[in-house]
Image (cartoon, rainbow, N blue to C red):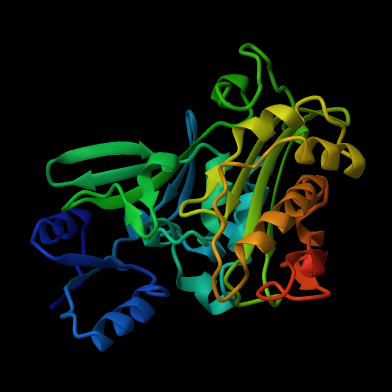
Length: 330
């Protein structure tokens, strides 16, 4: 069965029925459904929300930003957003290819809940919050609580993601002081002192699922990091921030040797990389520190000059000794 409601209220009525599935951009929906059909699973009631224009768009609010659930990656990549969003905009340019970016949506990326979802690490550094709505009301869930595991979310029956909200990352009260080594009351006066980036390791430059990826958001006082947020994806069932590393980076200068020392001083125990067709878990664990340093250094590079995807050099990511393939090139 297929429905294409014309209003949000109509969509919520349809979603209240049993066994419904939401279709938005469809870039992951169709491959998943093809796999299900090959094992004999009957298709669900498909609810196409592409006609709901109110779910698309980016707007500044009194306390930050609101990104509609149906906003596409192309919308994000070309949006006029503050520097704290540079990492998210870079990630938007690395989701598949241009055709996928033109139709794939930010909420779809979250609801798919893949460990390699490109948008999740950058959104974690921005303290993203997921807005949900159903016939019975609305609620919000922090992104780090919304994705609960591999291909699993906190969505309840009848709920629809309507937006992702981002608190103002330029004021100290909006930056998470619990996990970043930040003193309450610190302030960030200038937009120019906030930098963010996203780097992705893949087997080729485009149309590739990540081997590992890192998003970084930092605040600088001159050349010294005063606040940091680091999130790593494709190295655990759910992309995760690294609070111990964020604290260790405070006080480090934004130069390669100092950053490398700070990164390697912390055990990245929150990561749990696995072996799969793209790389071994050992390889992922070895390259992540290098990717983190690259992401931090990339924060100072203008977005238009950043290269797309890092690729392994020398050796292999999937066989042999992992140390043979830890060199990266762009």
